Amino acid sequence: MSGKLNKEQNEILCKTLFDVLDNVELIKKDSLNPIDDEENDKLLKTFLSAKKVEGCSDRTLTYYNTTINKMLNKVNKKIEIIDTDDLRIYLAEYKEETKSSKITVDNIRRILSSFFSWLEDEDYIMKNPVRRIHKIKTGRVVKEVLSDEDFEILRDNCENIRDLAMIELLNSTGIRIGELVNLNMDDVRFNERECIVLGKGDSERTVYFDAKTKIHLLQYLKSRNDNNPALFVSFKKPYSRIGIHGIERRVRDLGNKSNIKKVHPHKFRRTMATTAIDKGMPIEQVQKLLGHVQIDTTMQYAMVNQNNVKNSHRKYLS
Image (cartoon, rainbow, N blue to C red):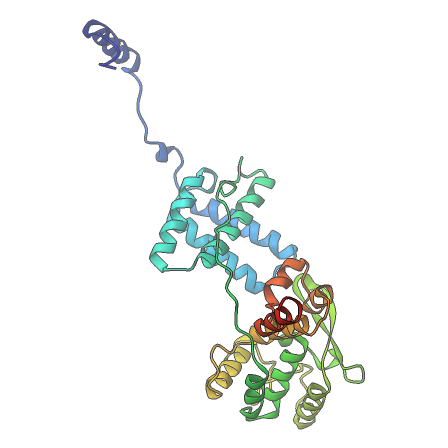
């Protein structure tokens, strides 16, 4: 205040402040809100329980739990006093420390937004601090799909009828790996060449497969000598239902053996969607096959073949 008051006024101000604040004890702000890990854990568990009731899979719940816990441990504050700056700093430091892509960081932002929005709706906090953190702009990456030649090479390199039937079904139906794992033999209608899958949110839908897939599935089932109702099982006793990690490993090893880069179960799904769009299937029908609630999600999966764009340009514009 030296620039605003003269010497005499400054002395009066100082004396007044000393008199008024003589019996006042200053306490650091953070000490008013000590960290209560149990309270934070309780709110997180309640949030995860709510998401489970809404139909989120165990895999999604684990991802939510891990992502939110990392943030809470790093920020090290009670949930109710975490603010926008805390989260901005956390996201910036996370990106720098892990060298993560913008897509990964934005996925974390979305999960945190879901968490704090729920807290706000349930009146645990006054305002969602993620609300002012906008979506992170990311470039559109055209993800690769399997060519016809790639798929033929994968077929040729399958060493057993089970793996051949598995990739045929993935490629023909475009189902998610979790849906494939949960399929039972009773879910398959061979005469109609269709099967019932249980998708996200426990919603059932019908998907369809081609004649080749039917033949290979029947050959595989004929080769089995177990009583497990699962459509795909392990090779060794007790012939248990093959899990997600088992399928991912088999598909990845098949890709490496075939010298084809980045082969994973989800690539068959994207390939099916892209092929369907390129051959003229209405996007709404592709959405139905893939089991998407929002058509925007379908558009992210279905990347139009660049050769078709080139041919259309020559046909209509050249």
